[in-house]
Image (cartoon, rainbow, N blue to C red; front, side, top):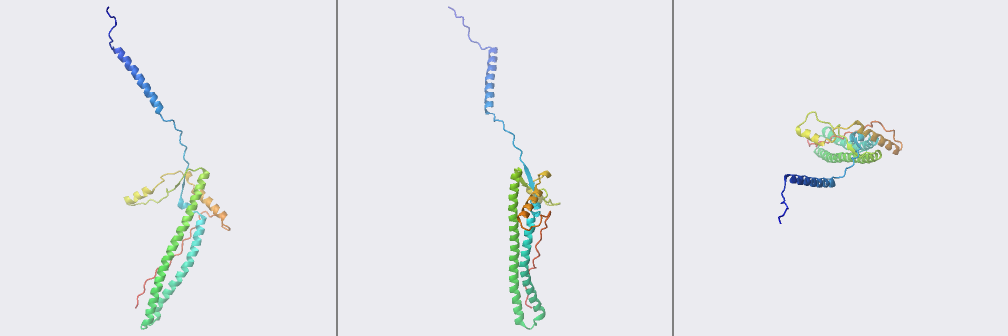
Amino acid sequence: MTSTRKPFALSASTLAAACILGACIVGGAAFHTAAKNAPAQQQPATPTAVAVVDLTKLMNGLTELADRDQQRATAHERRLADLKVMDKRLNDLKADLKDTIPPGDIKARTQNVNDQMVLEATLKAQLAAFQRLQDMEAGDMIRALYNKVLGTIESFAQREGYDLVLLDDRDFPFPARASLKEDEGVFEKKRILYARAELDITQRLITIMNNEYSAATPGAPPPAAKPAVVPPPAAPTPPTTPNLP
């Protein structure tokens, strides 16, 4: 009996159909895989509320700074008065050596020069201590106010809904002419290149802090718009060592 089954022969149409089917299967698998691995859609970020503060303007605008500096200047004058007494005594000794003590009185002249040297050393040491104390007191004053400013900024930002408060350095002086290294130093320190005027909360903070200080200080005058900072008086000139004639 003769078999009627035809041998299997791969035709071009069968190959094409198989390729199309395979492509569909692979493509479908790729689609499902991509869909499975795709990240979930993220919610848009909430805008950040930003403000800037000119710290130098803020500190110089505080009534408390002016009052503290005036108190420091008063203490400065008291200490300076003691140094002036010593300075006058030294000048008197120099005048005595020049105009009063006879040239032949070697003992008196030697004693005078010795007194001058002792007084000069004492005056020089006290003058150095005086200047160091002035610097330390000024640093303590600024540090205390700086910490107070930070606390006020934090409270204000939380109350008004600010997320970030930056130090405003837009008015930082740029040299008219400088070396490349100096220019690079300015560029590296610069933080804010542009900010809208509405972002500046400096004056609002000055008003808040001056009002709080006035309310907490009995007999304090109303906060001034621009309280003046009183510079300390100049210290006496360091003495020179006398020579025995």
